[in-house]
Image (cartoon, rainbow, N blue to C red):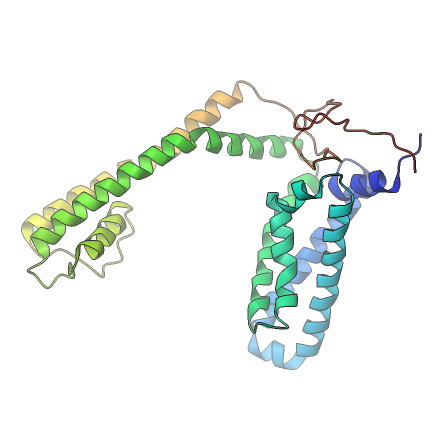
Length: 276
């Protein structure tokens, strides 16, 4: 049975497993790169003054093409809201709307640089299923670690509050910059993360001793979130799953296993045969 025009459109736009789909995404990538290059050139005063009209026309052409693509993505799936409020849907919208906003808000066109995030589609375009799987493993590891990392961050905030308060008591009478507890907490965060701007520094021997301990403690604390995520990744490597770029025409869910016939999210067939 022949596929409907929506099914064909969905296959071209959402999937990189077909020649047409790969060609579409490659053209899309070229447009994204061209748009980013235009934004960068527009920030150069000499180039903008000399080629301002060309830059404006080229950006409008690319914006209109992206607008057509955005609308096509919406109408090619049966549940448009799933795409509109998805990660890529939000990015696509944010990368398209700034040029229209520039008609009303001066300077908003610089937000077009958000289109760089759309380059993440390169993994789908090149059909690098290995990298698709690895990126999904990272996301799964981050989700699995979010509670542990959240508790850890809460502990760090409490620790910085305590250390900042102590440093305020010790250094408040000196001209060292510890003028309030919030400012002292700011110093504790900067020191604990080993950033060290140097705008605030303890002057008393006791304060310097505490600062030294915080600096040393910072090296160990930075490694904790990395260890948590790494442990999750190591456990996931035992259950490595090969994925493809198939996208559900009903809910736009991606990341299906090779050979899958149905969407793991909504249960709809991944290869519907529909008639016009």
